[in-house]
Length: 341
Image (cartoon, rainbow, N blue to C red; front, side, top):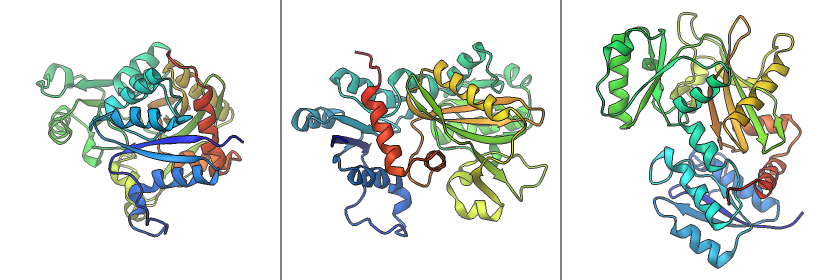
C-alpha cells in the first residue's frame, strides 16, 4: 500500500490535543472523530498534516503549495459557522485539483437542504414525509399551517446531528407548530422545516462508493421504555446523551428481524437515493419503516460521523472491515472519484 501525505481538514476547535490518549478522558467525546481518524491514518502508515479551518481557506492553499498532499481527508461539517456552506471547501479543493474524501459539492448542496432533497426524491417516486418550509425572518402564514398533516416534527432546514430537535418538536396542531417554529427561528437564526411524523421503526443505512455502491449492514434505533403514546424520534438528547438513552431504554443496535424481502428493498432504495442526490464517498440514510411495510426517507446524510463508535463504523465492522481498512477505503474512493474539473 502506497504511503500518502494526507491533509486532514478539521474545524478550528476540533484539533485533538497532543496529550489526548486515554479513551476515558472526558475530552474524548468532543474530539473522537478527529482523534480516531488521525490515529487510523497513522496506523496505516500515512503522513498526516492537520489543517484547522474556520472562515478562511488560505491555510488549505498554503498546505497544498508547501506540502503537496496526495489527498485531503475532509472532516468539516460547516464553513464560517454555516452548515450550508460546507460544499464551498470541497469546491475549492476541486479548483486546486486536490482529491478529497467524502461527498462532492453538488451532493452536499442537494442533501444538506432537507426540503430540496425531498422534492428531488419525491419526483423520483421515493416516499418522503409531507413538509412545509418556514424561512427565517418571514411571518408564518395561518393558511399554510392549518392544512398540514399533523402530527409534525419541526426542525432546522439544514442543521445535522439532531440540532434543535426535542420533545417539543413534535406538534399536533397549528398553534403548537407556530410556537415551535418561532422558538427555532430564535434559537438557530435559520430556516425551519416541519415534516409529517411517520410512525414506525427508525433505520440507519450506510452506503459507501462512487459509481459502484456497497450498502452496509442496517442499524436501528430501538425505543425500549418509551410509552406508546410518546413520539419515537431521534432528539438531540437521544443522539448525544447516553444517560438519557439508558434511562428510557433507547439504544442503537443492528436491525431486528425484517419482513421477507425487506433487506433487498432497503438495499435498492438506498442506492436509488444515493444516485438521485448525486452523493459520493459515503453517506447514511435515515429511514422509517411503517407497520404496513412502507419505507420513507427522513434524511440523507453525506459525510456522516465516522468515529469508531458511530453507526457507520459499526456497520463497516459488521461488513468485515477493520476501522483502519474502512478509513483506507474512504481514501481510495476519494482518489478515484470523478471530479468537476
